[in-house]
Image (cartoon, rainbow, N blue to C red):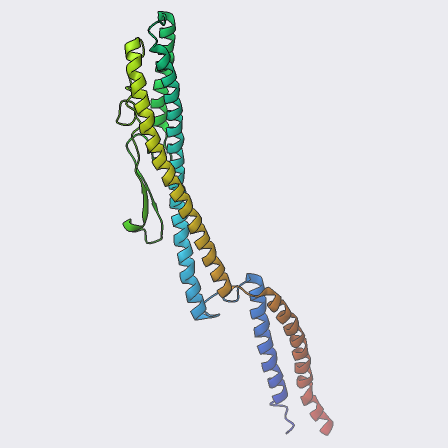
Amino acid sequence: MAFSVNTNEGALAALRTLTGTNNELATTQNRINTGLEVAGAADNAAVFAIAQRLRADVAGLNAVQGSLDNAQSALDVGLAAGEAASDLLIELQELAVSAADTGLDSASRNSLNDNFGQLRDQISSIVNTAEFNGTNIVNGDDDISAITDPTATTANLITITGADLSLGGTIITVAATASISTDTLAATQVTNIENSIDNLNEVLSRFGAGSTRLELQSEFTTSLSDSIEVGIGNLVDADLAEESANLQALQVQQQLGLSALSIANSAPSAVLGLF
C-alpha cells in the first residue's frame, strides 16, 4: 500500500463502516422510541400499505360500535319506559278491580278513582319523556336502526320498530280520560287493562329480543376490532427484546468504529517519519 497524505483509504473504509453502524443505530433507537418496526412507508411499503388498510377497517368498526351503542341506549330507555308502564297497568288493574265492587261506598270509590287518574296520567308522562338523543321508540314516532358493518348498506342494518304506548292507542287501550268512578266503568277498565298488559308484554318481548341482538352484534364487533388490532401489531410492532439486544451490540460497534477511524486518521502522520 502506497503512503499518501491526500487519500486515506483506511479512514474512508472505517468511515463507511461507522456510518452504516450509526444508521442502524438510529433505526433501532427509532423502533424503541415508537415501538414500531414499520412506522412509515419508507420502512416497508408493502407492510405499511396493508397496515393502513387494516387501520381503516378498525376505524369503520369503531363507527359501527358507536351506532350500536347509540341504538342500545335508545332501546334501553324504551325498555325502561315499557316496563314502568307495565308496572303502572298492574297497579291500575288492582284499583279497577277494587272499584268494580258494587258494595263500595262513594268515599272509597272516589279515592280509588283519584289514585287511578294519577297513575293513568303517569303513563303518559313516561311515554312522552322516554327519549334518548332525540329518539323515542315508545310514542309512535321513531324506530331504531344500527349499522353492523362499515359499508352501512340497508342489507346490513339492525332495525327495531318502535311502538306507540300512548293512552287510548292500539297497545294501551286505556283512554286518557278513563275513569273508575262507577262499578260499571271500573269493570270496563279491568278488561281494557288486561288487554293492554297482554299487548304491552308482546312489545316488551320484541324490544328484549332486539336488545339481545344488539348486544351480540356489539360483542362480535368488539372482538373483530380487537383481532384486527392484534393483526396490525403483528405486522408493524417491533420486538423490543430483540431491539434492546441490537442496541447494545450497535453501541459497541459504534465505539469500535470510532476507534478504528481514529487509528486510520493517524496513519498519514507516519509519513513524517520518512523525512
